[in-house]
Image (cartoon, rainbow, N blue to C red; front, side, top):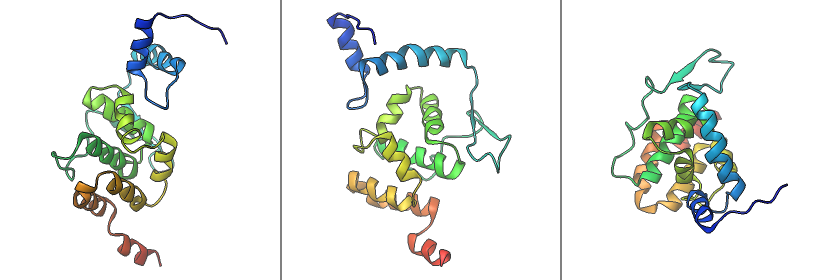
Length: 175
């Protein structure tokens, strides 16, 4: 791998764009240079459903699918609100976490790492750990959110009950 020399101003800029404990200088440059180039050439504003067996040709247009916020209170911290929106998109709209993140970044006019940071840095988790939580019972994610946002336990609990039902009722139905 080639070595490059950069001045302190460029190094400071890279640091300002880095996701702590995740990025290397190369990953920051890759994101800034290559992903920006590919997003400019990709004019598609659509998210494909990951459930191809059910929705083979189904695509969700960013214009026609509103960001879920009907059950999410405006006074919640932005990081919690956007994490709940991501969970709703993944669990209820059947799209991947990556596509949900792109969707939210596009909707809010921010960069993808800004949204990713809401549910990685804020929860002290890697993207892999978030994906693992998303693949399990929703109450596992609820417990993590309550641990990190104890002042909003009621709101988090209501979100999960409204979207996924009560754990006791789900356990009873599965027996």
